[in-house]
Image 1 (tube, rainbow, N blue to C red):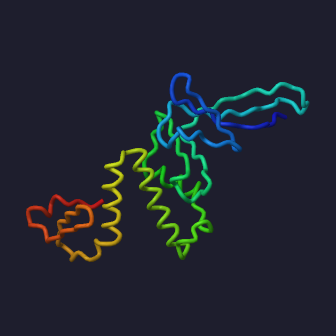
Image 2 (tube, rainbow, N blue to C red; image 1 turned 60 degrees about the vertical axis):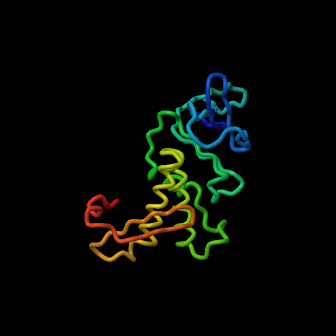
Image 3 (cartoon, one colour; image 1 turned 90 degrees about the horizontal axis):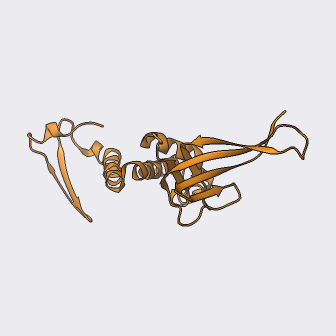
Amino acid sequence: MPRALGYSFRIERGEGDVFDYAADTQLPPNLVSGRVDGIALELAVQETTVSDAPAEVIALPADLLIVPGDCWTDLEEVGILLSTDCAITPGELASLLERACFYPDEDSDADSYHTQQAAFDMQARFTANLLLLGEDAAIIERVREAMREHVSWLIPKDRAIAVRAVNYQVDAAFADKDMAPAITTA
């Protein structure tokens, strides 16, 4: 019966720029989270139980690789690599990050499981948006999320408020009737 002897991931960043990642190695410091030209899972498989039989390496293409840092729950320390043709959405990536990296016992700054998970989920959504949509879109989405979660309940029903924020200065006013239709629900 065939057996797997080991595995590694081959990461291609360009012509001649290839890195093999195995569980006991670190990503090179110049390999940052984001898109790469290709990712392949390489499995070393031995066809028989005879130890001197040659192993065959099977390469399977992968869309995504999540590489742990020193601390799993700090997404700034986690390497997130996506192949150029990876069609994952920000929501799907955030969900994968939560399932792969959220570990509540490592977050001593947060008080309850719910608080820890909410903080991690916000960080995962921001990270996913940053990688897939860009910095501006990620910031805007984070502001929308903060407004939905922390401010929207203060706004009277059937009223609209226009907000302008620059640095730490925030200006808010009830919106004119003409502005109200421009606001859509997410």
